[in-house]
Length: 239
Image (cartoon, rainbow, N blue to C red; front, side, top):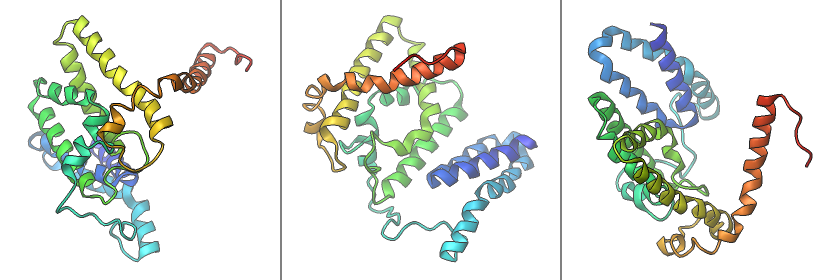
């Protein structure tokens, strides 16, 4: 019983960060035949987790319902559903093509409920994110608003990797990494703006920022040094 309450609480807290995460709680209904009445315990957990937002909206806007900023209302029809997936303007699969393999890998999983959960989650996220007026997600790398689907993507990639020879897996991973690493530098040093870079700004724009890749390494080195020093209980190296 406590597990269902906790699940509802976590769902409410997720919705505090991104409201499109709230509908993902419906995945729990896939367990309805076994859970029976216990699934109702999600509701008090959700209310408890989302209560701070409800109180804030009531105080600021005089409404218990979540309120979007002026001019930011969702417009489901027509929506930008294709764009959030394949546009050059931060499209999910355009900026992270490895996720296409992840989606294909979900089909290889034996659990039907897991497949249904992913299909539902991807559909809901696409519909909500595509209905937002700022569907591209602002100045950020890739389609950041699909980040909550990462566990599904990991499972899908793992399913693909276990069915391919290791040589193929490593080669494909290296190839896809060779796309994303320069794209990070391209985004940081060449694109540097919010408007759509267009496909020609992504593909031909990959080689020019390659000399800029080394400056990207110091932040990673700092994080690595901090983690190792904490783990090994040793002092930080001198700057």
